[in-house]
Length: 132
Length: 257
Ligand SMILES: Nc1nc2c(ncn2[C@@H]2O[C@H](COP(=O)(O)OP(=O)(O)OP(=O)(O)O)[C@@H](O)[C@H]2O)c(=O)[nH]1
Ligand SMILES: [Mg+2]
Image 1: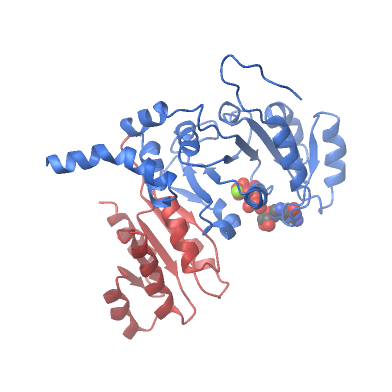
Image 2: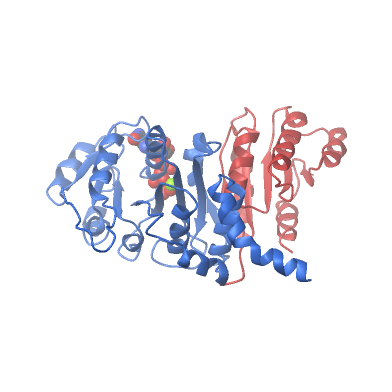
């Protein structure tokens, strides 16, 4: 399989809430779509997420955020990536994020936000699209 | 396009130099090139002076869920207290159907994620059999040259076919946990045969004593641990240290003992 390096993506959960069912479902769906998924588990800090993404040399970081802290956590992740010269790593996310905040996050550099109820296939297609 | 070409040619030496200076992105990029079988990256690894940059390679293997990653996490803690830089490769199988993989070993090691002296890399087997990833050997050779003092490989050992770890590691630690039942019979011909050190983890659980007593009849070095609390981990590290002998340069006499 020389040359055909599979797409690598880090999936993690930042913030305090301890539900990982949704994020695990996404991780499995991405694996089933042929992606190498690095799963970091719950309660990650932006620092841990970015250091892990760099060590794992991933194409993208998918963050699940259900605490209202998305307004600070996403920018922090983007800022840390930039500080390491790693702003080419795509950041996307999901969670209960108010509609009015989504354009703000996009403007800050978050590539895509998936709100609850998004069909899994849409997320898979988005991530696979990053490999092209 | 000459500019681009030059940039590509400079990349390998640059990445290694930056990696040695502690730039983890450079380390990660270089490992990806090696992993994807980039011929120049691989030949760069082969030409690195192994004698000058030798580091012990510790293989941790065992059935799913026995506590390998938790034990690795504790070993990292211990080696960091000794101020050693630790490189970890955590290997999990790729799906043979889709080529995808779910790599979750780092979950148990995330307390070290932001430590600049620790580099953790998850690797999928990418169709390779034998329990290791396709380019594990090359990646393992690259890490000492990138400044890492100790290399730990975690791999799932499920049977006789999954024992490539002996060819890459200087010392193989097989981790077991109570509740494996009659699998011990199968292990005698596989894991137990190749292991230098056998760890019975989850010693807090029922059945650990029985497993320990039984195993002591079969293998010389059995250590009970409770990886969650760190109990027994120093004994494991001592047993590892006793096994690992730095290869002597030609012409000198190796000391034993
Ligand atoms: N009771 C008990 N549980 C433990 C101990 N060590 C680890 N565990 C638990 O065992 C489970 C599996 O631990 P891991 O470290 O992920 O095991 P692993 O062998 O790396 O698992 P795979 O990589 O999936 O094969 C986790 O829930 C740990 O918390 C221990 O000493 N005692
Ligand atoms: Mg593990």
